[in-house]
Length: 208
Ligand SMILES: [Fe+2]
Ligand SMILES: [Fe+2]
Image (cartoon, rainbow, N blue to C red; front, side):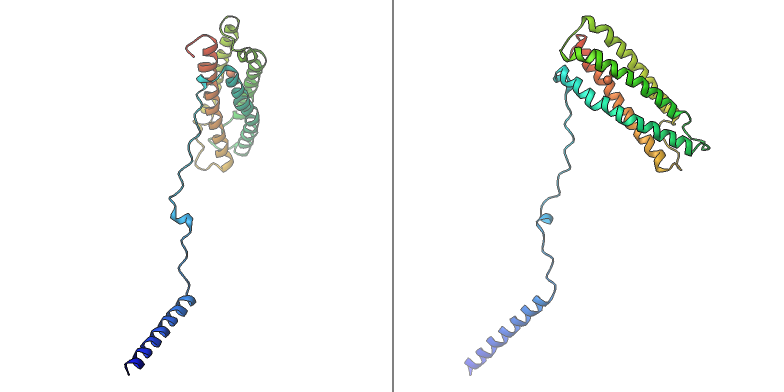
């Protein structure tokens, strides 16, 4: 009797487990946790390493200036001139139109291109050799004076563009033009800083 009751209990228990198993198989199993969810969020990318140009050779610095800043100006400024002309034409009646901006950028580009050619053809080949003082003083002083002219050119861009702030109703093309000019300004200031304060200062026998 007891044996029969135990056998019935075992059979029912087995059936119950089989029912649970079938119910489990038929239902949607919980979504597996992917390894990606178990790992900590990725660290933000490290900022680009700041190159300490005062520790690099004159030749390395000259190469960087030519390949990064000079090439960048020749690539980007003509595009900005075209964009400025298009904005001036499309919004000629707008109260905030940057009238005269394209002509000013053209003049600035001519000035910069002539300046860069003098650096590339006359001064930089000498500086690449690590030359200091003496005959290179005069060309360096001339380049520094021209940097002051570039600085004035950047100031004029800000005057013509209300400090590079597009009006609230400006379309994307207008906003993009000012964003591009802001990048140009930052790059040109870095460019001038590296030449005046590192490259030229070292060649003139300063502390670098
Ligand atoms: Fe330069
Ligand atoms: Fe320069």
